[in-house]
Length: 291
Length: 284
Image: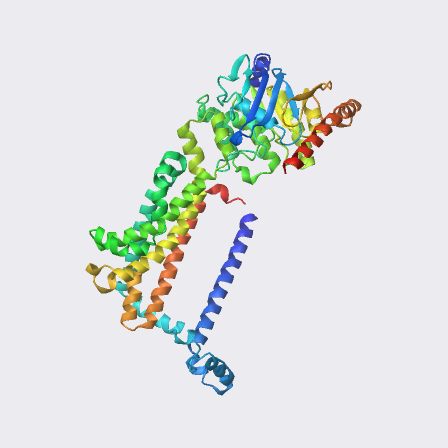
């Protein structure tokens, strides 16, 4: 019964999602074709209104300059069977995953250490907090100098994007565990290691997952910018340089439809990685599923 | 069950608490606040002793001292003749012989009810995991908790959670159960069911129960004795022996003797509550 209910709700959510995407596409198509219909006599007042803002009157501001979804779709179909396009996906995913996994592997134990040991916190936190406000992108030039390959340089940037968020969430999560859990475990004869393993770790897990989800989002923001700035790995040759470089290349080559293809691709890639992370989160924190 | 018999035999030897002249002064930046003032109290092995007093009067300080969560300033507390804490060793070592059931519950939300219940004996290495699981299932069934073993605490009602927590406590084979207003957050109907359930569990597993509450009715219904505490600083103001024989059930509440005992004590409680209220107003 409950499963049936859940399925019904899912169906409704999916319908809502599809309708919202459809409406978005229709508005976008109509908007970007405004060069055609805005010239019609009936839209004289609208043209006057646009002119009153000192803007060009032969298309709607902003949206009229964006390629229409139908054109974007056509461009997409043009690249979808090209190895170079998928190579861009692959490159970006590799950089995101490399940096992100490294951020988890280092950030989670490091955050736990800061949370558990007052000494470690005292020694590490001032440095950590003064490095944290430096935006990952400010590290790009230094990173290119420090790391032997451009791949490692970009991965380091994505690593930074996720690292601080994960650490901050782990520390906050571990510190907010209810003190009574520790007292109860201690009374029942749990050793320090048991308390760490059975109270601190599971108690921090929800915050770890939240931090990772946020970190993953930042990772995608950062990787695209890093690819644009660094030229996307010149040793890979032109279009092998990731989705960020794909966009940049399309811009330089004057293919505006392809810019949008690249943007949407990043949107999809980010969504897929967040969704995977969310499923992983639900899987490892089954007790939170039951609310 | 055979465990019931063996723990019945232990009743006389385990769980005798002696609180001697205990003082607890909180000293936040020189402004000494006396929470417990030369408090002495003796609790017999296997007795249900109810500690009644207004909120914030220092009852919980006393409980934390027994459990080993807080230090005392002077005096001493003994369990079965052994010193738990004293002026020389202000903080007792927490241990499975004294298990606290917390005010808002402290079941681990990431463990199922059964995993919570077997936590103690497995941690102490007293039972293998398999033994603990068998024993845990039996104890849960005994407490009317069959069927929720594999649910998470968040999936069952708050009344059930409290029962799971008491079963978890008993699995440690404690000498003393320390209950800190465990039913405070429950509605009065659930509360009445919980009282009977607690007594039922107690009749099967005789342990000393140190039960903190501010609900006089609850205190007289459950307790062999009721210690009415003064408001901060906390010490016994009046000790009442409840001469209503155990086993009790809910019909006791409407009995004549119960009403008489309520009358006898409610004034003392009310007076302390008023003092606490006025003190609170001054502080606020």
